[in-house]
Image (tube, rainbow over all chains, first blue to last red; front, side, top):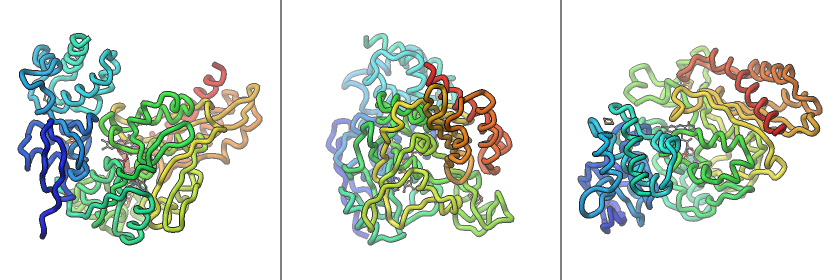
Length: 157
Length: 327
Ligand SMILES: Cc1cc2nc3c(=O)[nH]c(=O)nc-3n(C[C@H](O)[C@H](O)[C@H](O)COP(=O)(O)OP(=O)(O)OC[C@H]3O[C@@H](n4cnc5c(N)ncnc54)[C@H](O)[C@@H]3O)c2cc1C
Ligand code: SF4
Ligand code: FES
Ligand code: FES
């Protein structure tokens, strides 16, 4: 079989070109082909939010995004949300507050909340709760995660 | 979970879509946001060898008070406060669909055409094979109503009842050209959980049209679900209407999440036109809608509970409408 045509997109700022079959989702391309394993595969069905990445700045469930459809777009994964040195204020808040236990859900929360705080720099607690309601965490009980997002919002003010 | 191979087509105009649909007759699915289709494909439910992705078709975009393109994302509709305020049931419904992450990709068209659901259908291939496949995918019997050769899978979209209640119309395009029909006419009363739409072969949904006549009318959409941040509706009731001097000028009730299609109960609301919305009349209407609704046991909550919640929700929704008029 001839190899499929490549998709070209920017991945965490880097121009990327990679051949990918139509029946392949972005999550598999990132984790299995490009070895960016920060993005997690939880349910693989759109229910847990662990696989969230940004496509043109917009949160997207990479388990339900066909890889070919990011052609020409800008993809940001958890590996791309930190500044060149150190952590983003939101990541630092996660560490300081202790908003992570097993850590499996953390990349999804951080990516989701990064986009959310960009669009809502001064959110209410209720808005935060709503914004992360598509991300599942089986460990923390969410309170620390909410606190971390509040802290990052307050710090960024 | 892997997806079986398919060919992916990326047309950029409605004409191109219609041409592809004609060439691939019966061997393709449309792909909008993919939040319904791709989970089903991952579970090997009714795979087709071609997908026609609609994301590149500009004409399917655009939102205003008059028209919402089929490919508009739910999250973008949710951000249109003027639109949601103009059609309160739409506002209530869109904010409660799935999760914010699903709404970031899911579209209006995909929501209206979302696949019907059943506890015995939305399962992995392994699970379904173990029990024995059913009529809706790969099998020849129904596990819910075994005495019938018919599928009772539940229509579980939230927008349909909300938009039906405000008299929305849909525009479709196909080999025979374009046509516009009332939203409720999209769902086939003669159909079942498998053959559920009145679209002609290959037709696609292009837009939803919102009428000026119901703009600003009070109303509500109430949704029953197990986990409020996430689940499909186990029942959804929309009410919309207008009162003149305390008397009903217009009143519609639409029920989704309960049967194989969303249903508008015009014959039951017609009797209230010209009347005052007394508590007794609201209760009688609520009971009548409940009697007309027959859920089966194929979702998480028991059908008797869902059925009894119909009258509770109709009553609450109409009371909200009455308060909305007073205030
Ligand atoms: C975790 C989770 C929770 C969910 N909860 C809810 C919920 O609470 N309420 C709810 O209503 N839905 C829910 N959904 C289902 C789904 O996400 C939404 O219904 C969504 O709006 C579907 O839109 P889409 O663009 O992703 O559709 P797709 O998956 O792309 O398509 C759905 C179907 O419609 C067809 N289609 C799409 N667009 C067109 C068009 N323009 N013309 C012709 N055919 C078309 C497709 O071929 C497919 O059969 C949930 C999904 C997930 C994963
Ligand atoms: S209602 Fe019956 S035929 Fe339809 S999906 Fe469920 S088990 Fe299958
Ligand atoms: S892995 Fe994508 S939502 Fe769970
Ligand atoms: S920290 Fe373990 S799932 Fe969230």
